[in-house]
Image 1 (cartoon, rainbow, N blue to C red):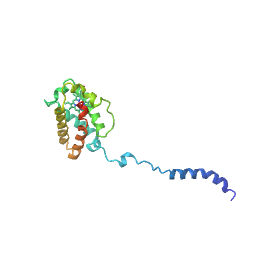
Image 2: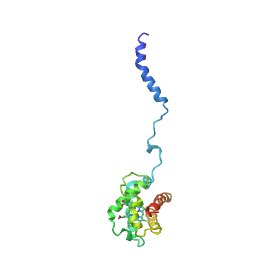
Image 3: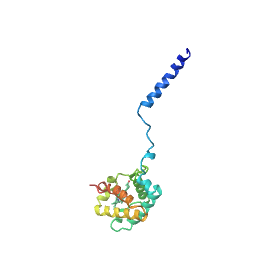
Image 4: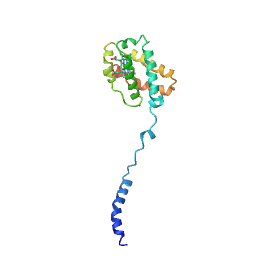
Length: 157
Ligand code: HEM
């Protein structure tokens, strides 16, 4: 019995610590990926799908007489890379976009007459592109809503 005292001295602090941790009320956070729904980026099919979509999208844009003139002086290789990074971020994928914000990035085009009718044409091509890639309708609607949310900034309103 006389040996019990030193043992208690050694273990009591650990027991107090353990009880403090147990009763601190802070359950460990579940990893984000385990509990949250997949992002639109993931639902689309990730990097390969966004890359394919942007390539098809710009092929359509550059054939469209209503809007192709805006891209006359644009390096389309760089532009496609920026658009891929931007849409990846906007659709909830990795944040690697380092380009201009939508207002600054299009201000010089607004000065050249960019307006709602041109924005509508771009929305049309985005929808047609995703349809062509067999993206389900409910997902196309979500992508369109995200693209639509940039309208005011793109048009400098
Ligand atoms: C859904 C709406 C749109 C999105 C998400 C978008 C996205 C982008 C991004 C990420 C850039 C790169 C910005 C930078 O230079 O760092 C850009 C530039 C550009 N966008 Fe858009 N854009 C949209 C609408 C439009 C529309 C409606 C037009 C014209 C019809 C347009 C024409 C251009 C052009 C020509 C550039 C390149 C400008 C340059 O070469 O300096 N965009 N856009």
